[in-house]
Image (spheres, rainbow, N blue to C red):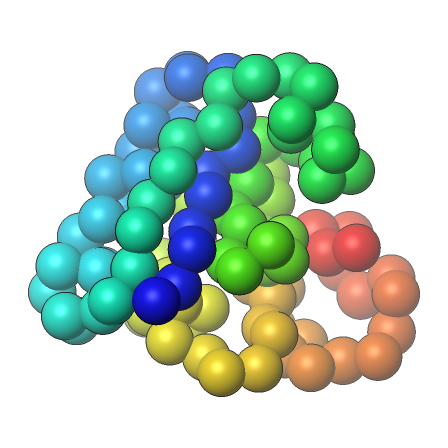
Length: 100
């Protein structure tokens, strides 16, 4: 089972990401659980300064935007770590500014 967290303050954009993630899980029949994290201390523990942020199995895979349905599907179904900036599996640390 995938453990998915949406990090954010509870703003409308963060809520949209939660809804988008739940939609992908439902439509694709994924075995996953979604947790919404609004506690600032917990968010900062992920070294995230821009929200909303998406965490899949304790790895930040996207922050600062809402990925498209297809991007979310890829991020949530990928067996290896991906990222929303299009450099899936890249060893580079700075490749678009969205990933750590």
